[in-house]
Image (tube, rainbow, N blue to C red; front, side, top):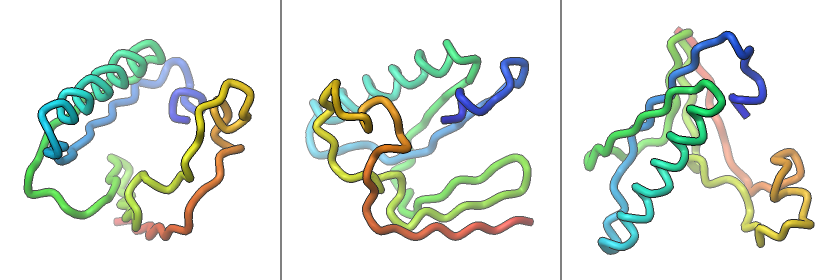
Length: 109
């Protein structure tokens, strides 16, 4: 969504702080693989993406360098399950994905 909305000349940096998936070593490896894939894909669109793990993290929020602080009630897990079928519109177009009930609080300094 950011890649689609940003001006090609804009420099955008996204830093993700998340917790480590500790269900199993395989799950953690898959988590790191996915995050590295996001980093690579974002770079193609002119977006710098980095991440780090913080085991004390609990709340889900986004803060911006423009003063916005956004509290996400469900985190980013608000989409309903998608089969990933190539013919399902929601697979490629986010606006066609079904969502779960969720709340968002916006605050600005």
